[in-house]
Image (tube, rainbow, N blue to C red; front, top):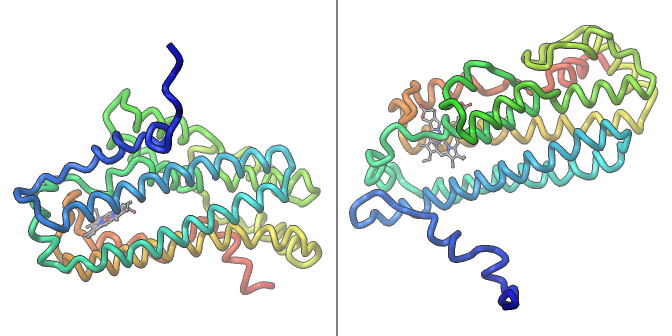
Length: 263
Ligand code: HEM
């Protein structure tokens, strides 16, 4: 028996994909499908971002700086689409959301392990974030692996060190499970890069683009939350928008922002 000819549907698993949206509201409420589809699309983008960011790390480890930049450009294009996509969900009014919100019970984007994985890859490590996921699940295993792995920033600094910049040894041998903290010595090395090396200075701008893009996503998400549920608490049990506001304006790569006023 030969395998049936590959088709668009069989390759992309369209039947399986279209069976994955299961509204919980009675009726079901019209807007619940949009809510599910938008979240699923985000999870797919998160998957692709993780795939690409792993690639960037490997390119840096192999001293393939052009390829690293090329892939970072792709990452940024995805982040921009992720920000723009919030427009679609913002067409849902507070009452339309209210019509099915109760059916979400305690489910919340707060529990997105891929979002936490992204934070880990970029340097925002947190043991507490792992502990929220049940042992031996796909999510927990993936998070534990990323928790113990070097971040994009570690790969970037190690690359710059191999290029001859005075990255402090403490930054190169730091505990990779710790959150990235600003470092005066790293900033001095970065200032050196910006002042005398246009090629690598340009390269340093790509993580800044990414940082700004993700901060923009957070801001737009908060505004969407405020206009949809106001000051209500979140389904995930946080104070809602009030909690989300505390996550704004926090850079992923603080050193790259810090140096700007000294250049
Ligand atoms: C009407 C739409 C939405 C509302 C009202 C909403 C509301 C909230 C609230 C209140 C929180 C705080 C945690 C909690 O207590 O639940 C939260 C967190 C979060 N949401 Fe949304 N959200 C919406 C859409 C989305 C979408 C489309 C995504 C895309 C995946 C998303 C991803 C996240 C993530 C990743 C967090 C955790 C952020 C962090 O802890 O830093 N949300 N959301």
